[in-house]
Length: 278
Ligand SMILES: [Zn+2]
Image (tube, rainbow, N blue to C red; front, side):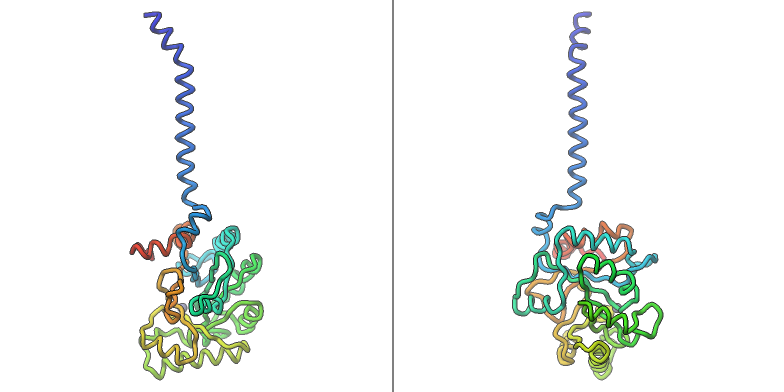
């Protein structure tokens, strides 16, 4: 019996060491799985096909789904920069779709809808720091008129510094609710105002509330726009219809930053599998 006890105590030390090793292995395995939540660039490149066109609205610290907090937005820009993303203009995206023109490595287009003043006050300084540019679709009759929207001076400054200021119509009415005459006016007048105020032609439109149909797309084309952006959730490929360009919506959620990475890396995959998260 004593002999047996001695034998057990002989094995005690190696058993304890073995136990500690197993525990360390388990911890390492768990940590490896955790880091997989933020995929490597290689995985990102494989999972991500096409060009993400990110769609923001407001960049401000309010508890609202359209308002991405400023610190979160800064984190998004830092991630894009760390991962070697290059911001592209609507003209570059258009040339990619229609002529197959090459884009810079890791292209991303950053868009904002409506023309809020926080785009100028909060987003612009952060984007400038990272050397990024963006596209803002403005509601032309709201600028310089309502609180919370940019002034035309601010829009002009952005336009003169590499941003594209494009049309989100005159009044932000859903285009499917309008008569053809009203529709024509919304499309033509907003384009004209932008050209007059900024000294550049506005060639792109974002459909207010995202609603459009084939007839509307045809009228957008007739009004002289080269392309139009929807809120359909996907990345843009060479097969994209230029009057129905997809975007990746970025909202303020319970996990804004995790959702951002998720959508950037796997959004198109989710949408193709029918797992669209809205
Ligand atoms: Zn809008």
